[in-house]
Length: 312
Image (tube, rainbow, N blue to C red; front, side, top):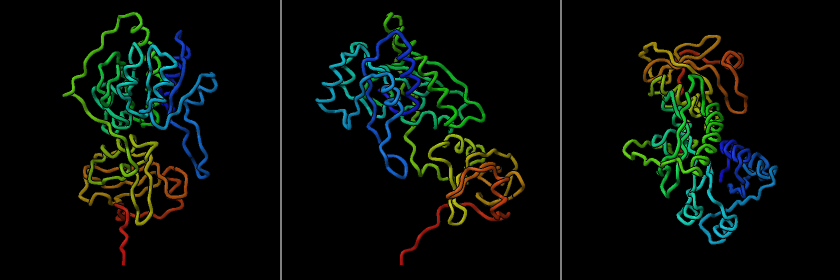
């Protein structure tokens, strides 16, 4: 059971293992792009190439779906980023249980966006945890863990593929040890748990009162989606790359303090944020040097919240 690109390495690792994949469950096809054409999820595309049957239920809490799942007679259900919380009838169906591949070192970062929040929070290490699923949000007993370094330049977009590949390897190893009877589940320490809730578009809005270091991490963690953004007058600007400068400043957060050929330096709650890659509406991402060739930006101008509309 899995849906997005993050789940593909787990699926491909299973296909390359000695076990038989009898079926795939993923989210329904979704409309995408300006034409709103239906697009199949990445896991479905791999399944079709491998000629493996696929189920895409709109609802999973139905007798019909449970019957279809039961017909495959699975010994174990492997789950990576499926996108739905499984309830007891599904969890209890396979004799070996449901094994989840989660993109964090549990119990840290339970939830739908563990990769993004680890980067946003400035972590230097994360990893993969396999666990036996229960009805909670990533609360089941842990099976195996593998660590992975978060590099200083990593974004959520560059970190996720490395984690996904690690997840595929760890899933196959987990199933091998479960079959051999050599794996003892470990209960999570709930008191050490932190959450990684699903990100929303609004989470990308930059709060200039945060420190420059925090804003750099947010830019990294919010890339590629939803993207970190601010407003320059009534125009929305996405910031895709930035570094922090420890220089103290008394300027109001959000104020542009320096403009040079390579970057724009902005006052924050602590230190300066040096913007190096930017994007405005209806334009492509570009280095600040290229951006400044066509846009006038001056010292003393301020970034801020979206302009308020007034009804009259």
